[in-house]
Image (cartoon, rainbow, N blue to C red; front, top):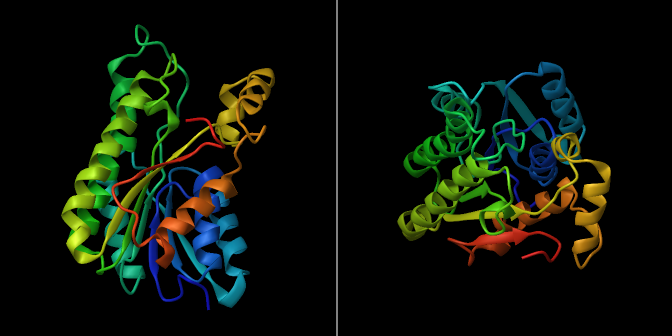
Length: 249
């Protein structure tokens, strides 16, 4: 019996990096998790197999839904309604593919893609949760340190995550009377395939040296923060932007 036993959870972007770590953590502690993926059925099946072998016969189910497509968020939540006994935890982790691009070089297509996946799909899943989530539920949105420590090349990405943070704060005020908490986790540099694919190794080494803990974050570090916010010990935290950065603020 884990702290999420009997809970139903939805995690967007659950096949790699931070998203996969969150799916595995919630399921390992008893939740039944529905997650989406955009492309790789093989990666989704790998997550399902890994989780299915977890404690207590924990379960996770991948749904192929690309949140870059209009209508996809509604399809994901409708599928989750069918597969879960009820919605208790929503984690918005999915993000559009990101390559550092200067403001001058950012075209409308790139900007729209960031807004569609990062901000619009988060709004739509949260709206669904506001209508259907059981009392005392948990909403956790994954944001970024780039909203408070702006970096060149992140205009569209940071703007979309800024919208997510404002949605978080507003929803916390609206859903609080039902005991539902709404928070955002803002990771710093986290050791994922995406991070390594967009940054040279020497740059990552420099970032690691800047943290008081002298290392990059790991996906499990972020999943642990999400688990705290999603569990009973997170009941008094709402409307917060939690910086999970290893000390870089």
